[in-house]
Image 1: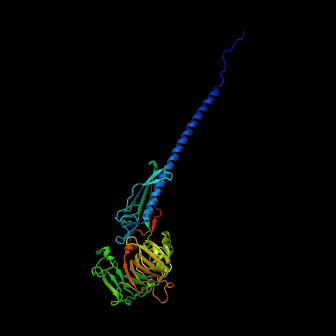
Image 2: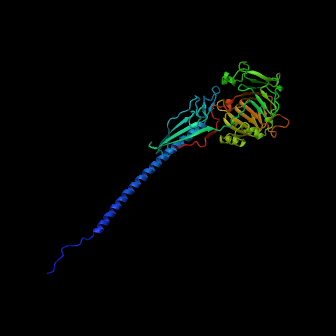
Length: 420
């Protein structure tokens, strides 16, 4: 009798195991892909918000640099209060670094709003101001902190800011400087109560050509610190307490006049120019162009009321106007001859490459420098002439001692940028 086999083979076990492994693998890949997408989405969101914070901080920094280099007006602009145009860290003239509220930036589609904070710091001992130095409003640290639209991401950037030293610490030290002869014949006074020289010339200074001309210093035995700035810069010389006449037609040239100085007369025109300015003519003209203050001689009236560097190209005539202020001076460079026929009032430095003809009544609080280029000065005439009234009062506060930056000279300090 044949024996029957009751055991049957198990079929499909390997297939089932393989399917199970594949299912687990697919599940893991799906979970990993989802996790990767989630992480990449989070990274993208973080990068986007960090970019928002960086953009906000950069916008605040740009505002800070522009503010430092900008101008402000104090007073109502009337003749009684006057316009005082200033720049730097202190736009309200209270001798305190200005502060700002939170700045807000809204996207063009009005869907995103980012914010930033901005601070100025001119304290000694910081990264931008050496320890032991005297802080001023002409340089320091700008710090901007930007925030994303949700406020979770933030970025801090900082930079040292300062000004170009136009005078290279060698600004004029006299009220009148001429490379050639000075032959004024009108009613003029030259005042310098800050130092002991009023005029400096490479050739002669003919003080005796005018019966009403005189130079003034502060009285012997007194110090600059004995007077207020207003007293040092006062045009009234009748007060013996603040003014002592030194040179006139009767006395002749006194100790306050340096004449026939070969070290000045032997300079070339470019050397003479560079003796007072850090940059050459090209740089100074570029500064004026950057301020949109380069004018043709026929358009010189457009410079009325301007501050900073002004470049006038060609032979010009001034018939009036007020250039610069005592707190925000002007540097006017005449690349030609200048005839002052009216009553111009200049606060700062007047540099004339050719001849200065003081035919009118010109007043300068600062310094007048005349190069006297022989190619420009009329043949047979002196570089400085004029029968009009001249009132020159030396003041370093409208030159290299200016409390605020000269407009248009702002510069970021190389290597000072930080974004960490």
